[in-house]
Amino acid sequence: MTTPLPSWPPRSTDRRTAASRVTVPREPLDPARMCRRWVRRRARGMTAGAAAAALDVARFDARQNLRHEDIAVAERGPAELGEWERIARLLAEAAPGTVYAPDTDDVVRAELREAMRIAARADELQALRELGTLEQAEPRTGDEAVREELTRRAGGYVQDDVDAWLARALATRLGHYRDPAAREAAAGLLTPPVLAHAALLAELLRLVPGVDVGQLAFAARLATTEPEATAALAVHLTHARPQAH
Image 1 (cartoon, rainbow, N blue to C red):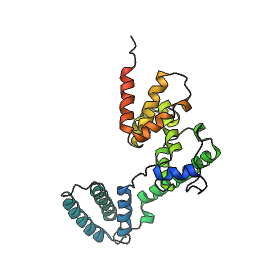
Image 2 (image 1 turned 90 degrees about the horizontal axis):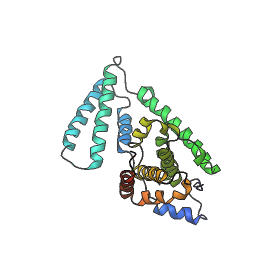
Image 3 (image 1 turned 120 degrees about the vertical axis):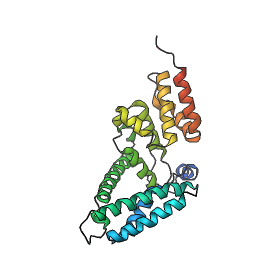
């Protein structure tokens, strides 16, 4: 059983954990989400006319951004324009004189409820980590977003034990990963190292039925350092499997 990581930030007396803070990669922020929040702050108190004018500006900026190849701009532009379009449409359909208020926006309120659910589940998983029983839990729908929350709480540093838990669950089809649709959706929700770890782990478990998953910890290390090569190895092992006659 893998020893769970302690709460972040690590104590200065824990040398191994402190070292992992330096070497473990950070995950990027979500530019689209930040952009939508920025639009909502700007739109607060706007009337339908003001929102329509802001939308015109956003459309002009979107056309200008087409000249740039910056990835961050490519992600922020559509998110900003899409949110201005949504808010402008919301106000256009509302009673005359209505001003935009994020607190009464059904989309924002739904996101808040989801954020509260994610936070509560993150607290639960963190408690299991501290008890050393995370591996005994089965993942649920939405735990991919909970993984992001735990990473955010850790200052953007990847949490190896959580990633290994999800990869093992995906490889062995535990929890909501029993559903083929959930496994397919995971490809767009989990990071390449986690997906590569799961793919290699699944093939190794097929090659050596009954093997203790704890003996395959090297798969996680391979996936963390060389996710593309690990995924390629998993594909190779899949094709190398004897075909049933």
